[in-house]
Amino acid sequence: MIKRSEVLVLAALALGACSSGSDSPSSGGSSIDGSDPSPSSDDSPSRGSDVEPGSIGEDAPSDEELAAAQGVVTVEQALALVPGQWVHTTSDTQCAQTVTFTNERRFTQTELDKVAGGVYRVDDIDGGTELVYDYTEDNGRVDCFGNNEQLVEDGATFTNFITFPDRNTMTFSSSPNGAGFSRDFIRQ
Image (cartoon, rainbow, N blue to C red; front, side, top):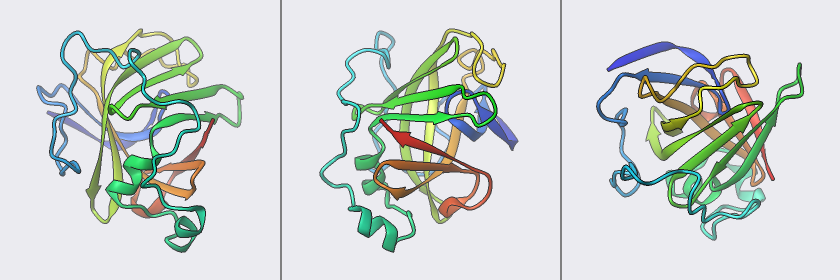
């Protein structure tokens, strides 16, 4: 497995540490239920979306609870908050990055001409809650940053620490608890 140490600006998921060339999509850590979220070969993140935009799981903390915890969530809380459609608009070009996460632990990203997707999981790592996403599909077209890197060919796995300032804002950051370089995605 090749582990890239620098923080990368991710096509639609903004930023993340990347691993590539792995036979396994896992980057360590433990998932909440220990299950393998990898789809079978005929599964697609664009099929069977079981999340409507704006939906929030019943185990999600309230905005007051999130404020009291400074946006830091447990794995269980994150799994209740992550599913849904999230958008980040780049400040310089106003290009919209849209990511849809399903309860089935699949995601689809669209931005400019790029459409990609795969599976995700949420881990508790290094004192923070980490979103880990493995690409299984990518059309190889240009994203908001002018990149057309084919993420699937490398078996790319990206990670971001996540916090929730409120139920409708998910902050992706390079460090636990929202510290470091960060980018906000807004629930649609």
